[in-house]
Image 1 (cartoon, one colour):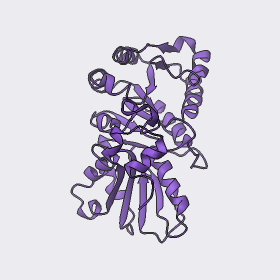
Image 2: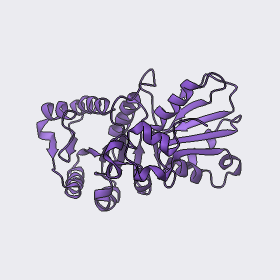
Image 3: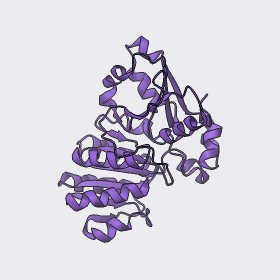
Image 4: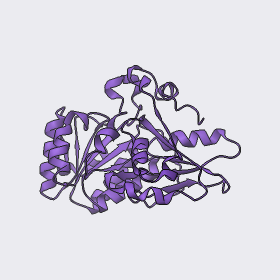
Length: 298
């Protein structure tokens, strides 16, 4: 996903001269293509995330679309006040790029477990969460974000994610994208966001028959909850939501909130999220998914 991000960013920056990339003294071996091609639009703010977000807001207020790139929790929790007051409140075109979402950096422990970031970012009223599930969705989200600049949070995996779309899909906030619809008679649906799509896809590979149909929701926010109930197929009896985030404050909780007032909808939602047992654990991403309850479908 990181490579798809930087490749798409370079392509978009060639056309859009307002695009700026800012890093917190990391990302090297990934960001060089942008740095080499646009040195006057690349800034290393150092290990000073609060200052970095303030700088990004300042540049954005002067017409730039600033992409702020750092690892997992660093560009979010370390500078939450600047995001809330400087970026979101003023509706500035700053895209916070979090690499290693979920448990991608699981071996580095709790400081790098990005399993509460949705909870923080989704309560910002103007913030659009972009959580692509494969490299194609990364490109799709990047194109949407640059065509519709504003406060946004782009959550990326680390590396090695499978390509699950045959081509770059068209994405819109709150709108589900069909990834696999091989079983027309199925009354079960999986709706995933971010790396949840990779997890759900691995489950389906193990199911020989009666596999649920798979959808993704890469763009979501506070403002598009009202679009969810109307997208549930009439024959759907079970809707599994999948995410690599704690249940509290995450994507599944957001979906349940969208179903308030729709008793027939809310009764169909079965969340699949991480248990809090992973918070104190240090292990590989796969092992932490197993510990957190995401190893198998049922």
